[in-house]
Amino acid sequence: MTAEHEWLSLDPGEEVVWTGQPRVWRIAGTVAGGVVITLLAFGGAIAASMGFLPGIGGLTGSSSALVWGIAVLVALSQVGSVTLAYLRVEHTDYVLTDRRIYRKTGIFSETVTSVGVDRVQNTTLHKDITGNFFDYGTVSLSTAGSGGADLSVSDLDDPETFRDRLQEQVRAAGEAREDDPAPSAETAALDGEAMDALLTEARRLRAVAERMEENV
Image (tube, rainbow, N blue to C red):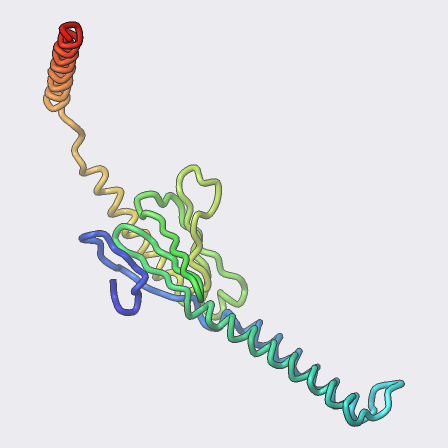
């Protein structure tokens, strides 16, 4: 765990391989929409106040104040929407370790989702037209039998780097499973003997208990 990722709780010996966040430019659509709506609100207020709207004369007094108040509220709501979208990006973190992939989301409360690298079966990299042009995209992960993506690492700059690092860890986990020796026949036989001994001792203790109950 680092000061930058206080939410992250690693197992002993677990090491961070890669960290990232969504690109801030993902909120560009929200910003553009907010600017357009704000301009329309103030443009409408100006047109209404100066009598440019058909059938409406120039507004004065309380009517003008009401129109401008509505325009200001619309502008503030758009500022709030943009701020919220930005905070969502800033409070989303992705961490890849040699054991798991973590995704943390949430502004006022945190939600941490993780998938073990040893469970990852498929990775899919998706880029739309602008993603190909500006080199950003989303990497989706799926595990065996999931029927779809279990976790998505979205809107990354240079997503190929994350995918390559992840695939390295997936291969390492697969090699570790192959190197893990299976129980030998001798060990299996010893386990069977130990189980028989335990069953015999259990039967003896049960018989002793039954005799004690009869003598009571």
